[in-house]
Length: 294
Image (cartoon, rainbow, N blue to C red; front, side):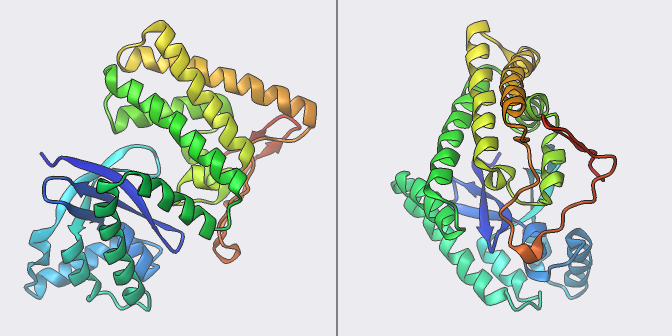
């Protein structure tokens, strides 16, 4: 079993899922994510399937280097995904005609080096996150709220892990329960509303959405600790209760301001924003009711 740490890297506002294998000190990247960045194909899975077939016919040994690892998809579930190490990914890039190939290679070398630095000094990971958000034009106030929210999230997932909740599908299930309870939308529904695909939802939340997300997760942890929740079932109940606290606070604020906390706002470059058409969507002064087109 590979001892690893999953994380996300961002290239030109596109997320690339990756796993760091501590034993070999090697990065493994989701091939489909890389294909999506370089080819800009609307169906990167099909592009990769065709490319794999071509490489096999050409007698390339790259196919044998593929490792299947589980990553969280847009629906919150974990699926086995083809991955390649940094070295093998550089070889694959040569087979993909793209003007982004060279910039991507430079980026690939940099993120690998950054991980080595972060192992020696974890503070650098925080500094890099702050630097990334600054480059993306986020305000200092937004960045502080985002980092505070992440700390709250980490404390909650630490509790889950210490009390019988499994990483991956069970974490995703509880996260979706919390989100559905306080927003009225699933995580996927919220991403659809904002016109997001592989992007991180929290990186595209406004200040109010970040604050209420943190309130929900802080409330869940407090309730779970008070009730000494163990395992998935008990923590699911705590998740619903904690999410309801944030929901009631949201509704109270919306009632006073006449404005919805949940919005379709995002930080995507204007040219890439493709929001779905709202079907039977109703907007009241207290909330959005959104039916995602799936």
